[in-house]
Length: 497
View 1 (tube, helix red, strand yellow):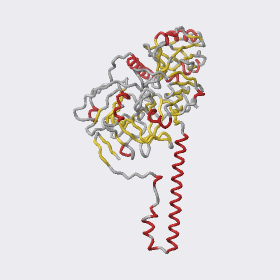
View 2 (cartoon, rainbow, N blue to C red; view 1 turned 90 degrees about the horizontal axis):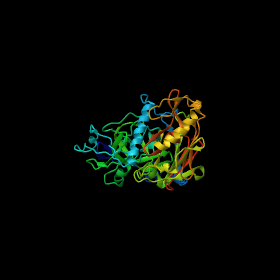
View 3 (tube, rainbow, N blue to C red; view 1 turned 90 degrees about the vertical axis):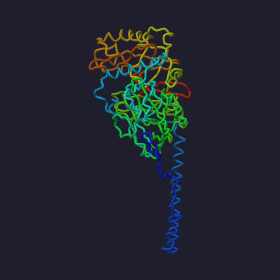
View 4 (cartoon, rainbow, N blue to C red; view 1 turned 30 degrees about the vertical axis):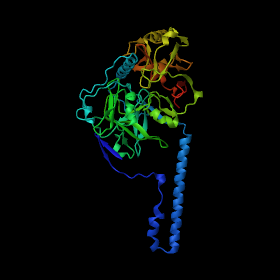
């Protein structure tokens, strides 16, 4: 086992025998040790007992191996519980000092960053003004250039995963816009933020290994994080995952046993063991990346379960949770639209928006007006539409809503607000987002409006510059499938359970 601390690697030999390979030793040394102290009859009885013991252990281990094989052969998917940070079932306490206005501000920074990337404009990354992370490397390596990665937004959804041997479970943010998964690790050479779970301790895991700069995984970091890998004096690979809002995680690229369920594991999971983690990560231990990249958790699980996943995002007021399913998708449950690959952001999930209707009538936008890059993202809260499309949607929506509800002043980036509670606005007109091929999101009041302040509800859409993003508020309670192998995205109504 390797015990890794502050860039220094030491070896410690620990015997490790798999349970199913254990065989009783009474057939060798022990049987002869008692030979002289027992009668012939007693010896024969002991031999019989040992033989029966051996056969039982052998049968049990063989059965266990057979059962494990059956599980592996029959497991077409992994099903995990998914929770909203602010939901009733949440174990993550939201930051009481963070207002809804703050959430919208961070959401806007996230969207601006994505827009800049698609326009091929240079974006300044996170700045290590104090150069603290140089402590992870050699003394003269403090000046670390960074390129921004993908912002995690407000990190609305999380799940729990096990890591290490024996496994310990950690609360991780789900992000379809991130590739590399990481979590905070002892000894936190520079800084670890407060989290609800105990910090992961690599030295306590029998299967933990750091990855070196010569590894193939280290060479994949640039594509996964948009930052070049770095090396410690010992040759261990150092990753940097930076985000559009200046949040970042930096640490050692590592490998360990990932436990998704008691019977579903990934023995050699590549992830980041964070030693300097600063920014807007809440009290989660880290991030689970599901983007379309070789280092994402999805890609690492795909050889066994297939390159596909689906989820249902619960609302913040839901009494239960949602789910994340990795693996086989039932096509009969979904209406699909083609998954489009964008050369500027090849790891993100793009689709084509074809039309929008309000109360069954198309908004005043020509077909050519919808020819804009459209991303579906779990990290964006409010859906963004290009100015021309948003203006047409807003006009049609206000025309109907203003007959029943008094308009209210704008709230942050939300400029279409009304006086009243969400419950009182249950009769809001349906908004239908139609995608290429006929797949659609038919949205009712809970997915259309969002409570901005007490007694104020706003249209949960905003304008952007020539980019569309389907936010998680519009995705809530829909089953959404990402079949990467078949390059298609599917939508199915029906709730999370």
